[in-house]
Image (cartoon, rainbow, N blue to C red; front, side, top):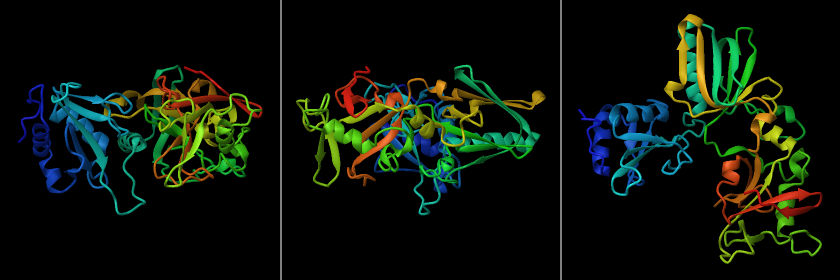
Length: 388
């Protein structure tokens, strides 16, 4: 049996691996958890978790924090220094960020041969926690309580919850905008009304992918020019353009395109082209056809067990969130359109390799840097915009 939590402040990959293997011995024996030997090197221990037959990565992550290394670990969320590339963040054991004294544990779902089987997501944690209370206590009241803002939302007589997953049409069709749902979870009330809930992890980077429809018809029917127009106008060298030659469109050896800053001394440095989403784009990409007008809710949170508090006397489940978003006012300055290079991407426009998505402010702008070209449209021209 592992002597968990007794490692010294400075740890090695071998020590941390041994503790994990001892604590999860039965799971390793059944291949529910196993080590990704290719990516377990240096300061990283990469683990595969069989979410279909064992447990979710979030629950395994919580167990590592609370049971395996309770006094010598911490969770670093995705998007924070040391959080790694996984959306659920990483467990860091030891003295972070001192090199040679800490190990980062990352968790990934076991690759499935069945493409229809996906890893358990944040929305699955929400559904499972709701279902557990309903199974025991019957219909309940659910309160989404945010740390940020005042949009506390209460839904009464909830008899069930379902993950929407890939149900419905997720690709926007300008001819049938009513079929562009954003719901990840539906709360089902006793009168069979369905309340759509869109779940975003607290450090989510994108609101939605729009490249499939933001080019044709022009602007994707959101009252804007097309993404191709933005790219071509920003790259124009015509003298009648205001602030022309903002970017240079470069065709690489693999026939994919990328953008560079023609004013930069480092011509090989790729840049992103960014502009604020207009009102209609914000509505379509963030709220879709089902969330707006008080019909549902967007919640920001990477759910953990401690976020679900049940009060039996009131039959009330309080769910802690970072933020509840009810309408456009709650979004503030957080919705941008972003064109950027993605390696190996076969694009849906005449500029393959350049993805177009609606991003959060932190992803689109982030910290000040020369690799972002921010623009603002005035009729048929673009102007460089310094939003830093």
